[in-house]
Length: 348
Image 1 (spheres, rainbow, N blue to C red):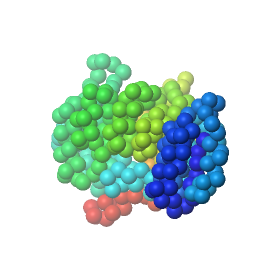
Image 2 (cartoon, helix red, strand yellow):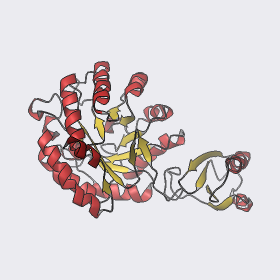
Image 3 (cartoon, rainbow, N blue to C red):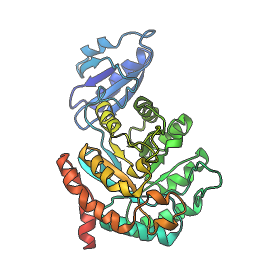
């Protein structure tokens, strides 16, 4: 169940409610919103006492049952969309954010050139894989620690926050030293031990949907992170595996709408993996903006024809710059603001 506190409840009152929840045999998880604070009580309601009597406490507004399995991230728990901050970049506050960069970090010069190009076009976060889980063991696996060093350099040169993928608990310290946000990719989206370890870092988490995961499985994966006390999760729809062969995956934009209705977390879209084709990136990005996604993550490369991984789905600098200009009316039609306009002004 969830206990919704009165607006303006003090820290002492919140602590008192948490103590009462513990006395009744539940584990309290407190969510502090912009307006209200909510205490989600996790436990077996069959074997423990009812929490409904807590409604008599003066600081409690109401006590409500939660029907969803994902208690902590559900809009039933907190109707307001969570605002997740990555450096100075906000997701969930009404701004449409664009994350961009190469699929893999291939070298210092190519990364810095790409970082400058996407920043100047309006991107607000740099993406780049230092560790790359690949289907074939013979494919390029990333530069590892050296790739992280190049990301550090690109961040220093451009000022962009960095998101990079964590693929193993063994790499967690190294990744955390570089990453402003940790990405959990589709192959690890249901790796619950890795999710919990990433949550414990306190870093914002970009959680991609598993390639065969249902929306509920995706949201429950986010719940694993929130249950560890880290509510800074951004969901990312990146396409699922279907019988269709015209595209690499099937980009499920309907799932984006469901996830935004069901959960309080920001949701972004990855059109690069969703299509696996560079020529579909622009229309799918416009569609993502039109349905009210909180942003996109796009793969950009100085010369996709020679990319060491996923060249077919990466776009060139000029194409990315055109995409950024095309996005604005779609973003505004969805009632949002395209972030990164300051970057463009500074570059012109």
